[in-house]
Image 1 (spheres, rainbow, N blue to C red):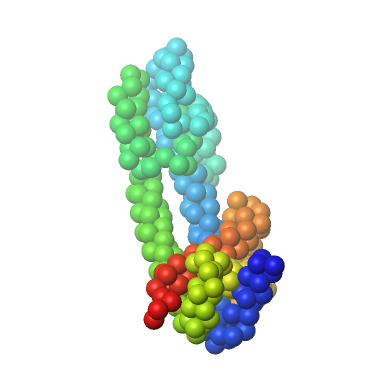
Image 2: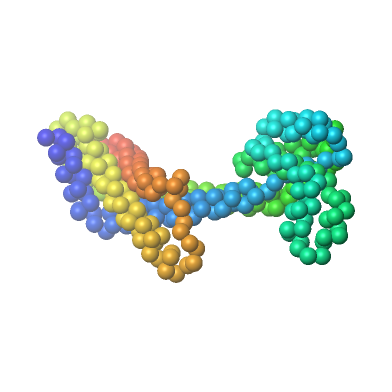
Length: 293
């Protein structure tokens, strides 16, 4: 009977304070929707940045060394923690690449066979610019290595922009969550204030604070469920219909390649915020409602 009462009162609380509950649900909806949009867009920005970063290669140019020394250098490169793949480019291959990239007019230069042999390294995309710089410094001291080159400027710009995007996005997300949480808190507080006489009466007949606050927590969770469901539906509509129609961005990937990760995260976040905000308000204001007041 008590569980039935708690659930019924949770639904009744939303109907009783329609304006406050609607404001709270709308605020939660906007918060979860914005975080969902930010997460999906942010994931795609990060994926694109990693794709660009994957194209950044480190090229190790060799002196005119024998095959034994070349193999020793290859072994040392393969043992580097950040190196994922090592490709050897001989002098003849370098000349062929030059002909392919620059076309007619470089035949005479290519025939001089002046380009050095080199190793082209694919580096771990999670490696930072400072880590790659340290590795390059080590490789330049390897015997038989003439020069080590990579696009340091692009890597640092990419890393700087990603860090800025993460900080700004994280800050906006925290502010959105805090604002929505405060609104849920205030909604439940208003509901408790409206039922203060009933709460005093329940305390007089021996009801515990836990029992009294349970309907308010259910109300907060219901608000979170409604807001989360609306936010998930909106995300689907925005990315499946609005974005392809108005913006030529192609298909944006779901985080980790599956829709249910983002949907599950949005619903869990919305329910958690509804539960936390209502529990916070209920614990504080029900304890402050004294029988003798």
